Length: 393
Image (cartoon, rainbow, N blue to C red; front, top):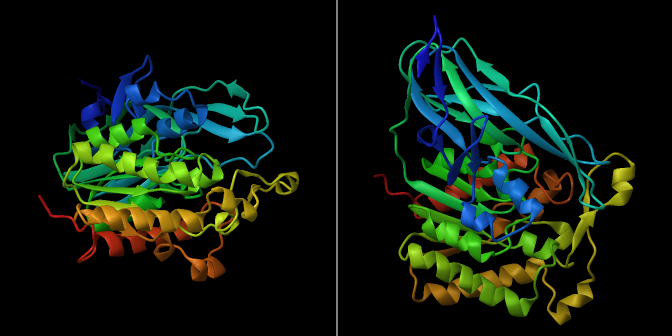
């Protein structure tokens, strides 16, 4: 740590980070991961690599008397050729539990993915800064949430007073899910539904929501097994359907195996299995899901289901089938596992909600719906009598 005339430089290290599973040193700063190296090595999947490197739920947590905070970082932004440009990633500053500002990096490395071939083009970018000035005097608790939809390598904090890693500890809630859990279509990292729920529930979030990649992978189950947590939830189903990954015969044993692995490391931890929220295109129509090319021609991003409802008879999965299977599996296992619980995703977002808050791209909720889902999850899971009602340490 070196001091300038009114500026102190603090390198970003693991001690300052919350919500990360692994931190890797780079020539620029640190690369933050939401899956450990052993898990990443077992899936040569560019989609998962992109999703786990995007820092949903990851934040810097520290105490300081600083009135000015600057974070220098290198960002990587992903987009798709022919699709509308994605909004810039947002850094959210929270001071003493209250929003205190937001900013975006002016420059970044930009990766454009060809939706037809998967080929990638990269435009170089450099290290930039986000600055938050005019903060209140005095010692305060600070969280700087990193973008949920960008890969960010934090380099250093520059402040006008010393920075110390936060010592505040709350019950740790580890959540695993799909792109909705990662935060697709949310506009800020504190607005993704798990962050909303964590704030209302008074818990410390570790978010293993991976866009397109909640696929009951054994390496993800082992990552959950090996991560310290007081409370665990799993939101399972939509990616299984829209990837058309498995049939009914394989799905049940895969769920059992995923739960068995987690219970090897967390035998008594409250564990909540959450079925998919409403997604009309896949309720009764199997996958695979695909981009709607007609919408793309009009400059809009929408999804469609390409399966045939009649294929259910051959074991193809739909969201209706997934919910029935998850409810059955949890009910049967709960007879010997009293800390295992089930939540129907339609209680978080269902048919009545779709009338007022339709999914803009037919797959992901908008910002208002993220907040609604987060509020409902907090009430149902963390509220009095909820499966994950936290016991304060």
